[in-house]
Every structure is written in structure tokens, then in C-alpha cells.
Image 1: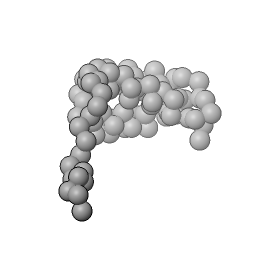
Image 2 (image 1 turned 180 degrees about the vertical axis):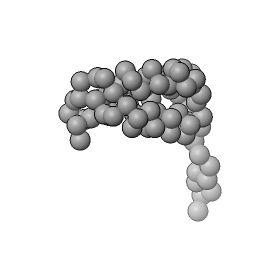
Image 3 (image 1 turned 90 degrees about the horizontal axis):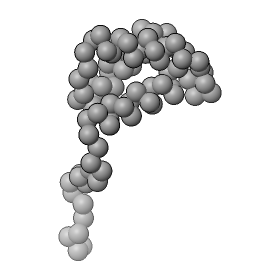
Image 4 (image 1 turned 45 degrees about the vertical axis):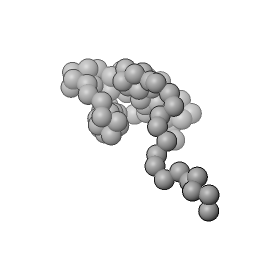
Length: 79
């Protein structure tokens, strides 16, 4: 064996800011949960942001959940 194995995680190769990551989470949830129940959207956002170590005030989080729940459902969110 050559000893050239990867035994540790590869470091992130992209330098995204925290704001970029939160924006990506919001875009993904817009696609996935448009038109869903607002409480469901709120729970999903809270979980995903917490998993990523991102913080958002409850007021802003609720505004995003309300906005996403009010979007017209699409082929992804209807599944």
C-alpha cells in the first residue's frame, strides 16, 4: 500500500459566506416547500438552519416561512 489514502475529510473547496449559505437554504426551501403549510415550512427552516449552524431571529424566520408558504406550488413542492 502506498500510504496515499485519504483518512480525513477534504476541506471545503469553495469559500461561501454564511449569508451565501443561508440564501442557498432559503432558495432550496422555496423550491421544495412552496405552498406548504406555514408551520411545516417554519419547522423545516429551523431544523436546516440549526443543522448548518446558522442563526436567524425568530421574526425573520417567521417572515421567510410565511413568504415561502404563500408561494405558488411547483412540480417539486407538490411531491
